[in-house]
Image (cartoon, rainbow, N blue to C red; front, side, top):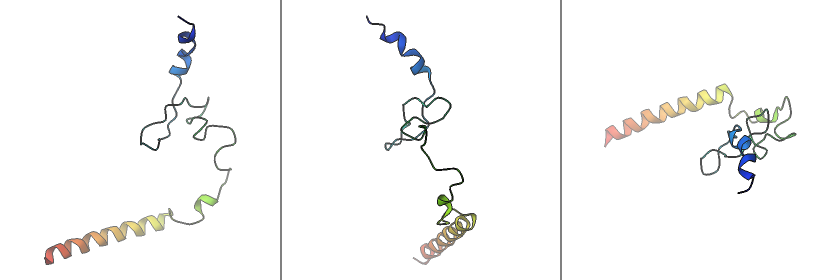
Length: 88
């Protein structure tokens, strides 16, 4: 037997990355020390958006008003569907 099994204990006990994979499961890589993501999912130094990144809010798709408008449209469409089902 080799001494390999004694060296993997700390890695197996380390916290895992919290990212989701394409298949929907969790990433099984260890998180970077002091972070919640592995090096591939944003835990590496220099990864991620810069501080005060305003690009994420540029389009306004997720503003409070836009979300509320989509909710109202969904409710209205549901009422229309119920009325149309009642006409059959």
